[in-house]
Length: 353
View 1 (tube, helix red, strand yellow):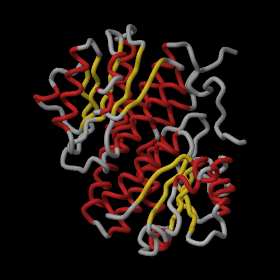
View 2 (cartoon, rainbow, N blue to C red):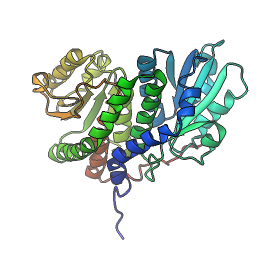
View 3 (tube, one colour):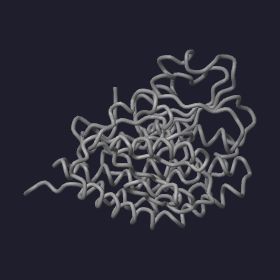
View 4 (spheres, one colour):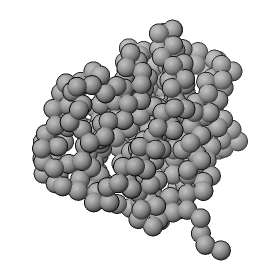
């Protein structure tokens, strides 16, 4: 029997609207976790850790936490904490270490959490999609109940855990404004997923000349750019990189030429500056894709403008809405390349050492 490609990944990307709603409902049952960790004034710094996709999620989480709570936060790969803890986090602090792992079985995050167990000044917790996992048994964890996936690549797990952590931050900050934003994100999610599917298929099917893919993002979107790049790399094995939007102009832009797709996660905070970068890349021959809340006269030059809706929402709140398009780009590029996105080369769902 011929192998069927994408039978796991495709419905998992398509299921993220339901996964966001389930995460929201679950958080209502885990208010104690919010009170004990994100709301507590005990901690000098909150450190988010993960590996691979979960590290890029950590970058977005830390950025949002700083903005929404006004408290110090940082993000590190899990391995930096258990191998280079003193270089990563200054001593003599009260630290909350938040492990992020879809499976709850990643060796590196478990080693990192175990490495600080019993140390003065360190408290541990986490978020996962598997209630019976090792991490969930070792530390108190938020649970994204529909974030669990059979496919190797992380898609709806990334979106749902990002969303759940943001909702926990909004609750901890007592911000009804941010909670209201996240309710609107849930309302917009389904149509954004459907639009992302159609737009990504048209992009990849209609432009076979695209052979370089670059993702750009700043602020809370920097982690999203790295994650978008990883999704494409995992599923299709094509040439792809990711950068901070403004940093891309300082050397890396030399790789841009016809056949290059430049996809920019457009913030409202720095919209005018980021538009200039995208326009410059267009002049160099790039196929420019803008992921934005709303199209406008300033985006008319782009080859594709993917509007998520929610122009009045904060950049951070829209994070989960930005992911369906780029996840589907990874999926359809894999099919174009004759690769099965369910089974990426050299990869397993859980990485152990």
